Image (cartoon, rainbow, N blue to C red; front, top):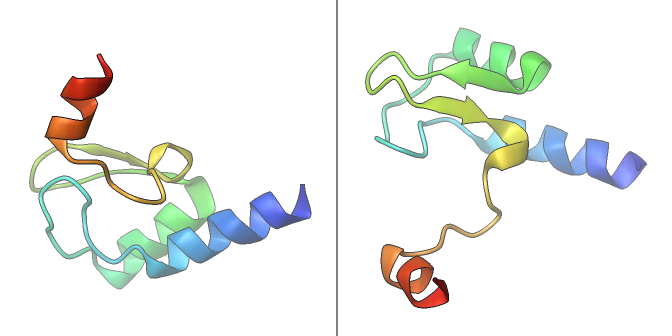
Length: 67
């Protein structure tokens, strides 16, 4: 369980832009994200949730082939 917490903290530290639109997150937004593990992007209104971000983003073609 401690490994999961450390893994999530590492993700929060490395996430400096929105995974959806690529907008740069301010330092304050990064702090909020590291504490709450959730944040709304002000540019595209995408809800960034630390636990929901995959380690390796999959392409849309791979997702379609799985269905």
